[in-house]
Length: 360
Image 1 (cartoon, rainbow, N blue to C red):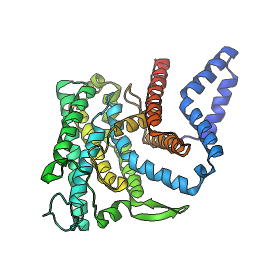
Image 2: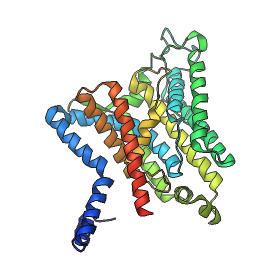
Image 3: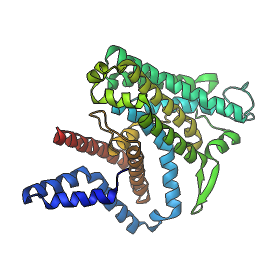
Image 4: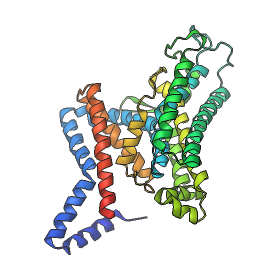
């Protein structure tokens, strides 16, 4: 494990040995490479001054709750970015799996229940529902991966297509049994307790169980990325697919599995989304992939491919959620949030490409 103190001392020593011109270039590169984090730190300080409640335990509890909800999506889409791709279908997959989970988890006596003959909601049924939606997400991811790997299609085109197809299925699903597009509500208490039941409280704010699930999921993904042959193959394909193929890596299977794993993560995100939001609408998950992509790029997952760490993804999600929580506390309207979100993605990608060009 690297020692941050020794690394800092070494960097300072190297800096002192540079001439004035190199020192200036070094400082400029350091500021530009960490511009988003520097701006975030300034923004956090400003928000804390304007809104003292921003740095309370309750605010922190709200932050980690949001991070736990958005982290699975980022962990899934990060693998696609490592392969120099992306996944535009992620948000719609979340919406579809959230709708399916919501229908399976409606209370037995709910007046507008879509399917009346479903089994009684028990722990076994909840776990089965979670498995079903995860498998549905994985199947959509498998389709994405197959078309990308088999026909060498760009992931942008493939996932744009599956995004539209999935949205059509969502609209069809919401029209079943006379529902006529109405939000799916009346979620059972057992489902709510399993996903969002309070583990403990911080500053009077409940920390739900899905925070624990997100921690477990993150540990599993860290193990997959860093300790398995699949993880090593993923980074090899992302760095140079042709070289990886020559080295004996099954590029086709690796690409398919990365997208399948990503889809499974979207399915899990959909499973918890209904409880988090209170109900599921046809618009659930809309543009969720934008937040996930932004978090990944901020966290150092490069679109150039072959680069990324789980710790960076976590940091990226934290940074993005801190920004949005702060903007909300400062009274910024929702329309402006879209503008800021787009600017963050654009700046993060530009800085990422700059790092690549400097290294090259």
